[in-house]
Length: 128
Image (cartoon, rainbow, N blue to C red; front, side, top):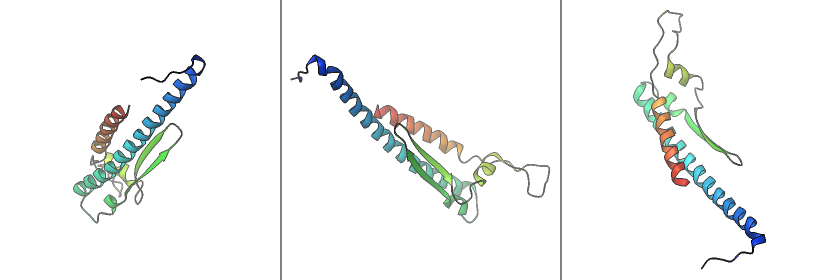
C-alpha cells in the first residue's frame, strides 16, 4: 500500500526521491566511467604493442586517472612516460633530420576512443 503524505509535505517528498535517484545514477555513471577508462588503457596498450615494435616503453607508459566533481566525472587516459609522443605517432610528423617527406601516422588510439565512447554511452543509458 502506498504511503500517505500530507499535501504540505508533497514537495519535500518528491525532492527527496529525485535526490536519491540522482545520487544513484551518479554512482552508476562514475562506476561505468572507471570501468570503461581501465578497459581503454588496456586496449591502447595492446594496440601500441601490436602497432609498434621496440622496447615496449611506449605501451607501458599508458595510464589513467579518474576525477569526480559534484555533478561530473571523467576518466583520463594518457601516456605518462612519453606525453608528446602519442599525437605524433597517431597523426604523423616531419622527419627528425628535416627531410621533406613526413612520417605517416599509425592510427592506434582513435579506434579505442570510439569503442570507449560507445561503451560509455551504453552504460549511461543503462544507468538512467
